[in-house]
Length: 177
Image (cartoon, rainbow, N blue to C red; front, top):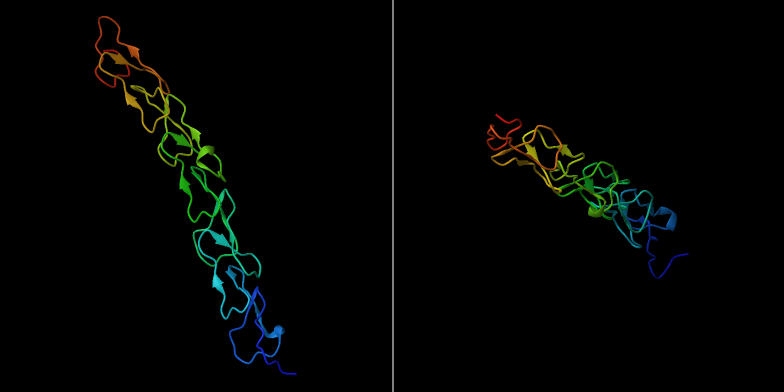
């Protein structure tokens, strides 16, 4: 029997043809898309979200993950040197003077402060030891050359040594001269 009132295809399905006769003729929403009740076409999930089953809505990617493309049915794990809050469409680099040596970091607070005697540029996965002739006395993105009248003969140090009597030490010295 006919209906005097058209019925909508239910949520998680769509109907892109005219004259559908039953709910069984509605098409399941494809993964990576959302289909609200009455949808005539699937709507791709935006970057930062996904759908892994027929659904009326997309799901934000969880913390520690991202999705940089639309219309996807899964997410990607956040790489080392980055963090990914919920709904991330791209990984965010750990800021300078920090590093991220694990995957799936969820917030900037999970990036580790760079240890003294090392440098950590934005997105660093491990600290880089300061070379001889330089030092770092606080978390930093770069090492500082030792000043004139000082030297540092070892890598990874947080201080410099004063040049001994009878020697001279230009800036960045690794040994007295």
